[in-house]
Length: 290
Ligand code: PMP
Image (cartoon, rainbow, N blue to C red):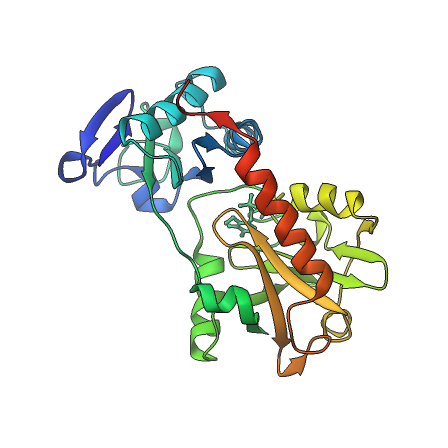
């Protein structure tokens, strides 16, 4: 495997960063998870835009232009001869001193890894997930805004640990007001009547790229798509529920906190959205091989 670090390609064993990197010491950095399907990088512009927005929020200067970054992502896939893969794009604050002052870090590190990923076993996509809400509250938007895709995922990891303890794969995180924010690595949607509903970013969610795509597809299939605050009750009485994320794609949810959602099987509209999302991934994106 060839891994991109600051413009050069390294083998897995030699692809290393400094132990003084503030990405390691403090989670000070940002990342993107991107997928390529059928020889094309899906929604690459959206991921690059979000990366640069995350950088702006952290006052982190990325030492490459968005055009150079786009080329580097495509080139990393090409060098690894990949057509279907998961790409992890990371920008760390870079090596500094043991103090946390980011001004001491003069060389942000850009890392691109292209590999395979399978978040959930295929049977879970067929049967749907059984998930729970967890005690760990999603980060406050005025503390570490969940809109920033930072390397600091401890909030999400604590929630994932609670999901593990409960014996399930994923956790729904609520915000400090008790409204649904998102899952540890996915956004949440429900179908209720002819509406497709998802929490707004102000509820403490990442502006998910899959979320945005699914909102567009939802409109195409005639659903009324709306961002609105949701309570646990709204989830329990939903007709259908599913999660979205680049890694997870669309995955149905059939049980939440012991309450069966709809008829306990992946919903009809969820399946239609999955089908259309899949079609889109196979036919659009930035070509890797020209
Ligand atoms: N929320 C969180 C916390 C995430 O980490 C992710 C990405 N894995 C998502 C939502 C989904 O975002 P996207 O569709 O852009 O991958």
